Amino acid sequence: MYFITFSVPMPTLLQLVRSVSNSVDASGPCHCVVHLPNNSVLLQQLEQLQSMARELISHYEQELFRASEYARAIEDQEMSHTQEIRNPSAISSLHETPGFDLLFLQLEGARKLATQLKTKGGVGGAAGGAAGLLHQLQDQVTNASLTLKLLADTNQHSFGALQQEVDVLQGQLNECEREKEQEQASRNPGPPLPPGSCAHGGLQKVSRPLVLQLNWRGLSHKAGAWGRDSAPGSDSPLYWVAPLRADGRYFDYYNLHKSYNDLVMMKNYEQWKMGYGDGSGNTVYKNFMYFNYYGTNDMAMVNLSSNTLVLRRPLPGATFDNRFSYAGVPWKDLDFAGDEKGLWVLYATEESKGNLIVSRLNESTLEVEKSWHTSQYKPALSGAFMVCGVLYALRSLSTRQEEIFYAFDTTSGQERHLSILLDKMLDTLHGINYCPSDHKLYVYNDGYLVHYDLTFLTLKPTLSRLAVKRPSGDRAPPKSVKSNKPSRS
Image: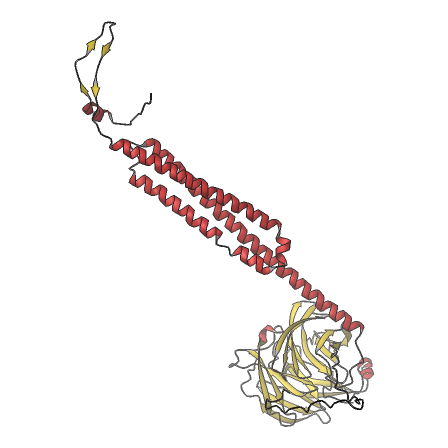
């Protein structure tokens, strides 16, 4: 026999009961007959809820099985990451599979179905057992959704970490290859470059610094410049040293030495007073010193043979009064440079928003012949110099090391990033001058005269067409056809 218990309020139950007169049988028990109304609505609702609950349980078990299968597949993927690294497209296809989205949609549908069952079935009073079952199923569906989301997030994070690790390893591999190429080039540097030659592939490395001596005015004169005539092919052994005043701005004296030995021994020199220079952007080119005239954006040139001011000319648009100087090097608004290609000035304007501009100058008239705009913010640089028409920019890495990190080729208009380390003795590099005659970099480092040897990449030999005598009887090759396409320089 089956017993069905209904949760019916007592007043309602009393109304539904109709009693008849009781009777006693021969054995003595009392019998009562109770008539309930013939209402099958509640029974039908219960049967519907039970049927829906069974359907929901079956659907939920299917989705849970699929989720567990997918979780096992994810574990298999993680165990085979090494093979997947070799095939990036495979990683992408696995990560972008719609399996996660499909499971999310199916579980969301199960959750909505449970909510509809609770609403349509009126679960809450008469069907308390079914309500508890639906609540339990709804909680299980919610937990399954959270578990699936956690699996998806874990898979995504694992993929991101793996991709980051691959990028790091690729960067280390590229760095290793670059160092290997540089090491091989240093072991086989090839013949030394003749003075003033640009037959190389660009700057490769910088030697250890050679500290010559303290400047002749003393340690308090930390700012200044020095070097050798930067004109290409110059045979002049003249060296110049130009310390600024202790304020780090005013340029008033300079010394000229007839040879390197005289400079080392501090003998046979000439000392000149000038009194109108600004900053440490000086350079010497063909026995003329070029500098920024004090308190203006004027360019000036002095004849070193007579210490006479030859020319003074404004640089159009150039800022001055420390508007866009280098980082840590104040008052260097106009930075002059000489190399194998000519005389240059490096500066910034308001129109360039402080970005560095390279202009080639006419050495006699100081007229700007051509200008190039770079992408580098001048106050973010610690200095710059020119070699064979290529601008090389530096930035400070620490108190003892700089990095040549940027190059701009004025011939092609192309820029590139590189990493060439340059050691220094003290914090700040003030004047930086390159000499094509000996391929050295002359640096004024917080009052000390320091120079570096520069090493350049050797050009790879190209195969030339050689005229080969053909055996008799051979057919001559067809004549070349002229093309209308412009030739590439």
